[in-house]
Picture 1 (spheres, rainbow, N blue to C red):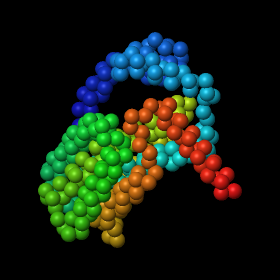
Picture 2 (picture 1 turned 135 degrees about the vertical axis):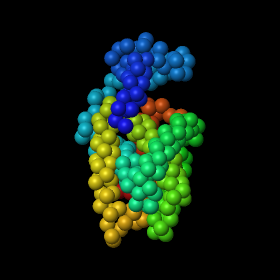
Picture 3 (picture 1 turned 90 degrees about the vertical axis):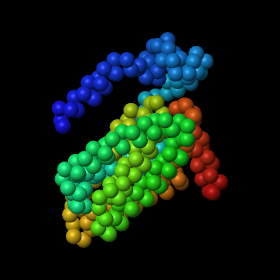
Picture 4 (picture 1 turned 60 degrees about the vertical axis):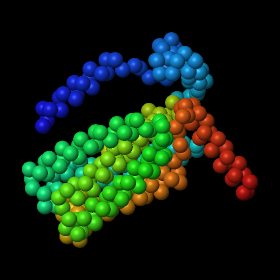
Length: 289
């Protein structure tokens, strides 16, 4: 199983040789012609010129610091990034990916069939990631996230109820697969997209490092606590999945109330949006005083 992972790794390595540099980075180091060429392949010459002008307009700003993330207008996008990354793990995705064989075995499915079910889970995860790729720029980030979170909350609730009712076999596998599909088309890839969009160029690298730190710390917590929750006589697998369903519901409420739509906006337009939000907040505070 470990040796088989060499194949996709080599495929990724080969593709990196034809991957272009970020046009924003190219423009920032003075390689404007190369930046225009990359952008031109995506949207044509007019699009490339407009994007290069927008990038050059924000380049003179001072490089951001970690301290800038925790104050002023960047507090809201930082909260969004941290919340999305944490919810993506506390919904239980890696508990299933890491312990799927254990989960299916504890539900009365044989060990051999458990390995087969784990393969199905992985394939569904792959297929529905392509669904996210196909619809994220058509439907938008918020609608996909809301749909995915709602579906995975229902699926996790159903899995928890089946454990409580001693239901196993295909119904249980169907519930787990439904959750994986909902996660793969929304909460799996979209938080990474949103986190890369909501921070300005000068802070994006630092912000993404914080988001990555949060998601892997959350992943560690879930990976360490799932066996304890699953094996606990007081909690058990049924209540464990209901806890994950509650996390998905909390994520749904957060996206519904706090996440702005970023579809169709350039990174510079999103940065201007946060500036406008900050100005409106200051004006509102001044009126109250």
